[in-house]
Image 1: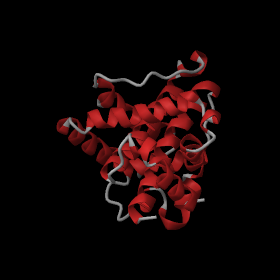
Image 2: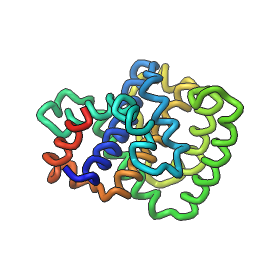
Image 3: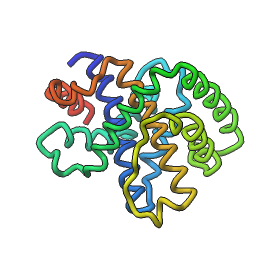
Image 4: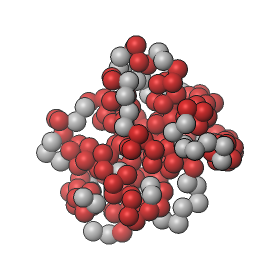
Length: 209
């Protein structure tokens, strides 16, 4: 297994973690903060020295992305049918949306500026999970990615999705998913790899276990 494949497996795990978090949140109104926090933190990690550092460093990255790694292994392996179809759809949609974003330099610049503003805001709160931080990340998504022609349709319980706090969480998680999809592409990942490079990706995902 190459170091590139190891890094790709981290990015892929993060994409699937974002997708699964949204799928569960949309249906239940609940989210696992232990899985959510490193995803939101990753949005603010713009100058990390390694892919692992984006998700907590060498020691914490495996536990921080344990949920996404498990789902990615199921999706690429023999347990694909056990994966929520919405999770698969969100993961692929995040990759597609990020490919649209990559062609919008002005929007990328705006996102960079907004990340800087949100990073400054974080100094006033004890956690990136604070509702004002989540709302700020959600606002960044609304001001940028929501304006692209492709939109991710969220399926779930409307009683939950109509709550502003949950809607903010969904958009914030999607922002983290876009971060992961961007990382996946920058590391050479392509959607067709999910079909034709499944074996090597599964080996890399298993190595993270």
